[in-house]
Amino acid sequence: MRKNVIITGCAKGIGREIALEFARFNYNIIGTYNTSLEDIKTLKTKIEAIGVKFDYYKLDLLDDSSIDSFCKIVTQNYEHIDVLINNAALSLDNDFYSKTKEEFMKVLEVNLIGPFLLIQKLVSLMDGGTIVNISSTDGINTCSRYNMDYSASKAGLINLTKSLALELENIKVYSISPNWVNTDSVREMNKDYLEEEMRRIGQKKLIEPIEVARDIVALVGSSVKTGSNIVMEDSHE
Image (cartoon, rainbow, N blue to C red; front, side):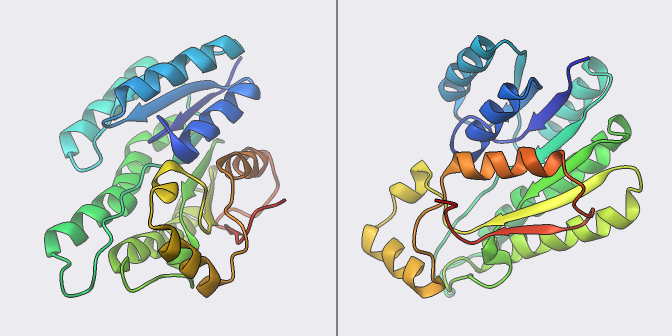
């Protein structure tokens, strides 16, 4: 029987490449999007051309009712979930004195609380499965003065992973923490700022999304100890 993988925020960027890579490994894909409907429709065509099933659902991690609705749909329509990839994330970078409580809370809700709730509500379908939380080296040692909320959320996700590994005895739980990845949002940043940040943290080349995707697929099939955080500091090339 073909395995099922849930990937949040898979309309583009890292999530898109994760979905394509799991499809190449013969997984049925259950993808979520929030605003990028046309992008996920395009992805559906690409994935189904590979020969696997692709179902997509709207999911807003800032909305508890959206989370509840998505989890209810999954519970009703799928007998087993083999892999859950918590990829969807939010960054609202600005300076310390301008950041508001509302912004801080939104980032925490999407990046940390949302994954917790999805795991809590879907874990009954995952006996023997694997959870991968996409964190960041910003949650370890590359944070900047502009993303305190993002860095805090990603540090929390790493520690949530470790705690869940103790709680979920028959499910492997991992986090993976890349540096700067070559996504649309990164390419749209101020070039001088990006180069300065990469020099500051010692990153020589952007990591490609496909590299993250391949590492995740390899991690799912590995014997790496549950609770581990995998750091990706630079491109494999």
